[in-house]
Length: 464
Image (cartoon, rainbow, N blue to C red):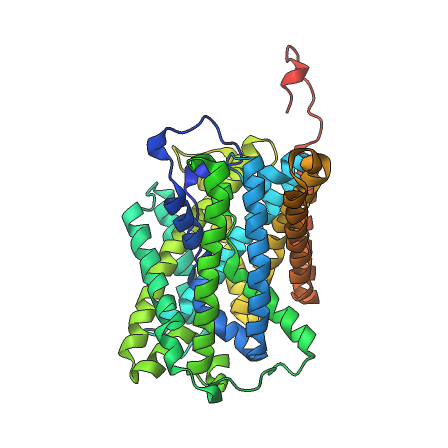
């Protein structure tokens, strides 16, 4: 989740079953695994994040810092889980191994919703930077058309079987990383205290403002679990996946916190609240013209396309893996050649519908979609943290020394508490729609697990 751009893991590594061990030429070590995490976390969403946090004022930076601590706790938890279950699959595998098929289904279903809803958020953030050049008046249906183009172009690329070329992915990662790195370093030299505005600009109690801002900020860390999802392709996964997850999350945390602080301090608060391309505005304020901001916008556009291309594939790969385990409709498990066409089309249609509804009904389009994505992402995070606590309770004392056991319990409990806290700030309307969407999957699960009549001559054990 769908870096908001979040460039996803490779298609052949996203399934829940590790399969036979890949040969060494098809695996990657610690640097590549860390790059996978960084590329998955950083996306176009972070380019729109300062505007989404601006209504709360600088107090949102406090929320961002707290979210960072929670994200690091989640990263450490996923690392420990990967040591126990080193195969590919991530949250889906952990849930199924610890709590059975229904928990596995619910986790896969929630992750799938996060993926296509996250794609809608990526597209909306992408639109803000496209409109630096076209539709500068931000006319609603013009924005909708641009967003739909951003969703369906990567879908078309995936449908014809063209995979993201490694070199292109490296270029897009560099292009989106450079503006953030600049703002997190040199950009701090241009910060002016008068641009920050009121510390708590929301007009609500500080605790409520921090919780609400934290729910939005968590979106920027979705994707920290991707090394565990691709663990079957990582060389020496018990050693490298935990390190890659923690190192990648920590690197993004530093860039995020300092970069967002710099944008807050270089763009006047009143302007930042209404900005659709905050990093462009920040670069323009620093350079005193428009050329620098245009370069950032161009980089964000390319980055967004690369991100949507990767996440579109993951939207199809996760349900395809679950379908092969009998936990998703069979249509998701079919592929045309190597292309999971049904999964790609269905996810893109859903993301398109959400985008159109959001632009025509929501007042804060990016924020509303982000909150929905975060809510559905928190469920796999909750279940994974609970799985870690479960395994510690069952086998931890026998396998670990006292100090390691206490540390793992503390970190997993923090990850669990942080996930619950993230739900609190989503707002009642988002929780209602999010849980409604998640619960829609339960009738489907019941239908999939219904008893099948045994045909004449069929072995009953062969039933699904």
